[in-house]
Amino acid sequence: MAADLDDIDHRILDELTGDGRMSMRTLAERLHISRANAYARVDRLRKSGVVRGFTADIDPQAAGLGTSAYVTLSLRQADWREVRSQLQRLDGVAHIGLVGGEFDVILLVRARDNADLRRLVLDEIQGMPGVLNTRTHLVFEEPRPTGGR
Image 1 (cartoon, rainbow, N blue to C red):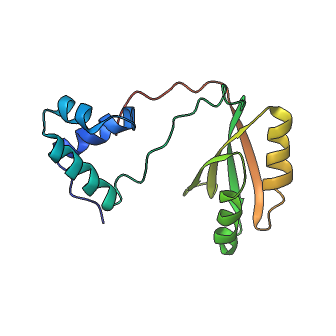
Image 2: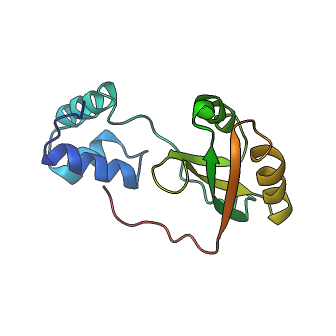
């Protein structure tokens, strides 16, 4: 069930998306609310599952992951849960999306280089029981999104 969010909640989410390490004092000042209100709202957003956690925004290039690709997978439907479980444990898989359309899953994968990407896709992913085929789409550039929601 979706949480009932007001304008201040959405503004909190926008601010935290931009800087998850922002202090409550700074957050309160930017939104013109009290610190107690900021604490209470962020706590409510966390407890309700709207805010799942706080993570670092890592530059993949600077972290030695110079090759990125979207990989689409077609699966045997009965094997989806097992394939998902294996993908979640696989180093290099940054995002997993179950989708509708001409394929079943789209992955964002990150690798050191093309040889590492080849190993990840051909040896690891295509070797999983239930994966019928894959298609790999290299990412040439990843401009950082500027929008919030």
